[in-house]
Image (cartoon, rainbow, N blue to C red; front, side, top):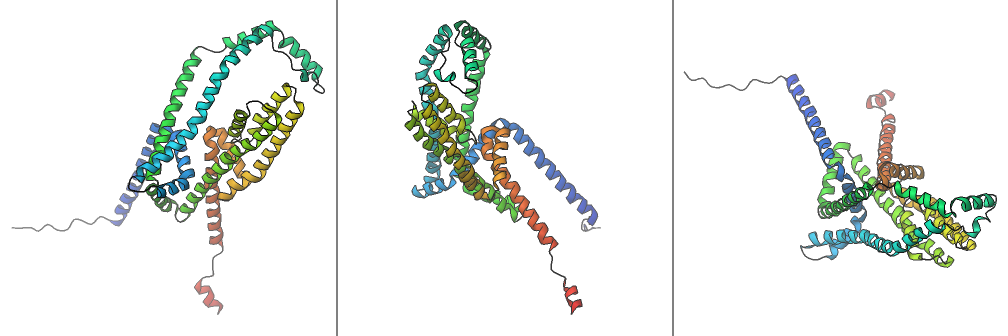
Length: 380
């Protein structure tokens, strides 16, 4: 006797709903665990990935122009390789120049330290002429710094406090930084090569997770990166060039290295005064008090214009960020993440402000709802 198999028993609707909900929770838990595990594995290289992402976003318009100028199918490799090597050269060349200059001046520096140990540190003439504290400061200088025995004891204490293992630690840190820089360039190459497809997938993901506002948030973050690079890096380098002319007019020796150093530290907000005030003190110690006042006064004027008028427009205007949030993002990011935080801070602030605007606009639209159809009919 043949028996035909009937259809499988139907699963109750409540049980199917519970199963689907349990599967969603399991997928979320698994995805979260995998993301945390991946971050833990890559935590030592996260700065390299972040720097590569910032470089890729900031230089993407330049890369797009370059890839159109390179003919043939090889441009998919040659264009990202050229841009990556150019970035590496721009970063490495100043470091090589600084190393050469340090090597040149190291002999003179060692000789100067030896002379100070044997003869003491001579007091500049302008110290005693300082208003108010000149005589007290001159007396302290003569007692503590101009005395050879005091300087020998002071430098001896400094040398003994430098542990021998610090050289090995410094060497290990340099090796780690070199490896990190190499991974940054390697990641940057692949971001340029696969950037178009990756950006499409990220926009799709943001749209799926955040809805229509996801793309607007992403675009505000990209605008914040562009504005931060322009407002911090380019404006800082421009400050170094402009203040460098004041160095040249004041007769400061080694004008080009001083101007380059000023441009580098000017990338950090409130960092430029450290450079040009140091140059002014050097000029004052050399007897050029008027030139020192000129350099310091002109430097503060340039910084005031750049920090209060140019940078807020370039950084905040690109992502429609208020100046207060721009400043808080830069300073807070610098304190939290170091140099990388200069760029991450405004990006995070742009995302937060964008989400805030989206949510508040949605809440306002929900409160202001048109009257229902039944209400309109009842009125008629």
